[in-house]
Length: 205
Image (cartoon, rainbow, N blue to C red; front, side):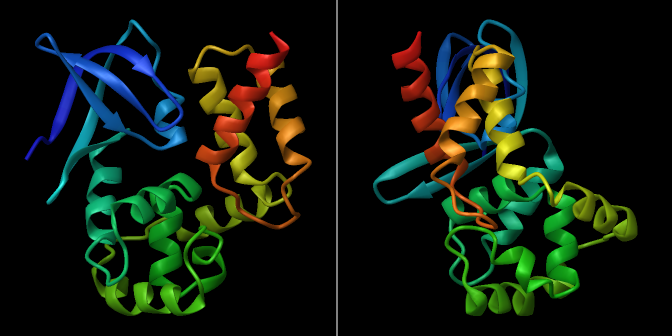
């Protein structure tokens, strides 16, 4: 298993990055939040998890070991594959996910695209006793309430655009432009909005 990669960031795209390690460019699939921390040409360390399939080898990258551990735990639940696990971490930070599972907060889990009520119930049933400590839950809950007025996907999208080299003004304009097509109280796929934003910014430059 490849537990981590450490090297120069050669490229950053909507769905992942290329990190040069020992002269080899490794393609690493990352969430928008992780991508926002990367800068082309600068060194970076990513905790990683290698997912092996019959027809593919996919390396997933994370900001830290805790996020990777939760990614791997989520996949032990029936019906949760690597892409859905990564989406869950793109929508909610690890502490919020742990809190939602430990407290059977189905509303929070169903904000993740691809998870319905039955799927959320199954995840809670299978992982609630294995999710680990949720110390500081009160702080996490109040923080969630405070952020509710500003959908988390907007901040994630803005950070991802900044990580790709767009200015703060460009990122803000793109977020506003794509938000017009996002229904209220929904949690869209940040990766999809990121592609739309890049296309929009490419036309306006």
